[in-house]
Length: 357
Image (cartoon, rainbow, N blue to C red):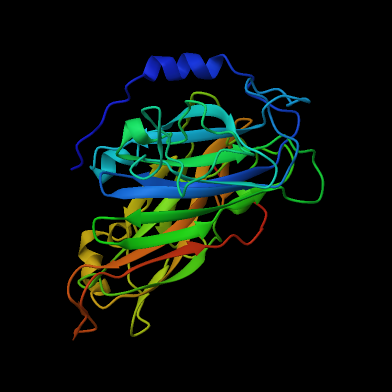
């Protein structure tokens, strides 16, 4: 279990957030899903901004002579290391307007392990950013998760660009386990205009996935709930449920001889979380997965809309994470550590389908 670091200024965060102008009439945005942080794991994000339309320090449109800012919305949960407990916790919200400039790139370690110290402040800003065009050395920190390690969360960064057919925000995430050197990453999802609806980024329903033998390779699913409103103040507590198969396809997993594995167990997470591949099967069925196999992985959210039972399909962005648990693969020696992560892509299908009560 991780040793938990308390948030040093929780009250100041809440008060500071409420003092800002939180909504914008228009914005391009970039969405970093499932960002972890621990004493040996950091999430490093690179944010690229190609717009001249940005915010001022209070959240209004930056006028002539005013410093340009991006709006960083960080949603996180402080985790305990007990997966069943952590998956049920909601994310709380922290937001700041932080300096930017036209054609700027800011590379940030959200945990603050890496990054430049400026006047005693751990900024999290990496790689000798000179602070000439983007005058970011203002006493503020971009390391938004430094005081809440260990955490899981997600990040949405916005500018003040007008809605059109182009994207003026882009980003990449680099997840580094610097204790052993394992890494994975992804290109962040881009959003044009002022939409707060991120359901279209939900992973395909189902996503067909391969599973390696669990005695040699740990497989887990990193899940981020998505919704029609991802930019809430104070808290994000939407759920997403994953399983092998659903009511239309109850047998969703097969072994390496094409034999179906009976039994399925749903797992639900709130906001962001992690589910081990074997935990989607009842204990009696897990032995059938000894050599691995393949599965149809479904994700959905059960909810009521205007009083009617509804299932929101593709309600989670899912990354399949794999790493070795020993020194062999398929019985052959493999020295060192390997690490692999696959982002399960969306398919753009209709997201909401009513169900029978």
